[in-house]
Image (cartoon, helix red, strand yellow):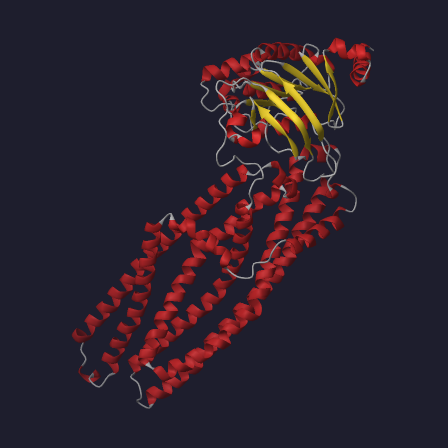
Length: 618
């Protein structure tokens, strides 16, 4: 049951143009990642695993040192073979150098393997922690956040963006750190081997770095835009799949597919531009790096021929120069991954920084114990965030005594469901106050408030899993006996026992294997097992046939004993026994009383009753 809402533009004619326009707007409203500072958000997660980070750092260093030692051992071996005493060299004198070369290679292999293990382990653990923290945070966000952010976009950040960060942490960051250390170490040894040739190598660096600055900004912008457009595609697909039966019933599969195709093609076109820019940047860097190395090596060979350096030193210089060049090229290539991850982390950071407008105060007022179940609305005015000029409740006041059953009736859009949403504190009113047991909801702990309420919505939201798990969702510590008692009270035990596996039978995604009436009875059982002092029933029997409605209504009558109950009903026959019927229209209380009193007054309730009971009698 809803108090109204705007239709989605994408469900109207001209959906392709609307979608294209929304994608262009997404590019404008989302801040671009201008640097990699957003990756600093990963540091708190890394700090939780200092041991793995320490081992990863240690083996990064030992792997780099082993590679540098390999160049030194190679130089000594070549000088032994080609030096002035080369004529006196024997197999016995040369073999130890080969053994040293082999030992260095073994050290390199072990260090590299351990580096890979600890870096990958650290990356996987950090990403797992990030996913968990992100999902925990998403569950704290209030409905107001999801009015402006589509669920599909949130899921895209939880999946696609986290996967991009995972790629960085599990492989790219390892490659980047390894090559950065290798570059520093190689340059240090190059200076020792030949300062003059190393100076020429260093002169090449500004030329090599130029493409990073020329193309880096463009790659970064295209990366963020590509991620935005992919999120839009996933969001649109999620909406279609959520309403798949409706799409198929109206024969709009082709339109849904066309809409998704358009979004994916736009995302691919943007990705193609990004890939082209990055490929061009990589090609330029590699060509410049290795072209420079060849030129420097040519100068080194001539120096060796003139006797200005030994052939062992020349081989070491070549080895280190190639190592430095390869490291520089790899860093240039990984830089694109870093930028992509920075864009993804910026989007994740936006989500982590989102704060719910509804939260418990720092020092909450304790709820009285034992609970009484008293409800009070005191001159409440409330408008939804998307409709600030259209209050759903206007100067609304209502008091419900402990143990009283009050029915809210009236035309659609009258504010009945809004009463429930404010009681559950999904929103706070702009003016006025909502109280339970004398405590203002703004001042109370949110968990304590909701623990006193049990909801049965018109559309039963159930989950994959068994019937027992769905009922126990109402109260985690309920045992099997509590679950069975609640199921029997809701007239659900019969069909549950008939399932293959009974209470342990899997019900499928969103319990789609059950009929509408079965889902509703399972939702009622879930509310009953909660044993809360306040029951909120939003058309709780609307999906039941006449026989089941009678049985469930009888069960609810028993469950209401000793509890405060608020009932939303369009079918007035279900609320005839309520202690009080409150008639709502346009967000106000226009009348209240018993069925007989309201019928006798001849107001809005009398007209609704005459219409409904007249139709039923026909």
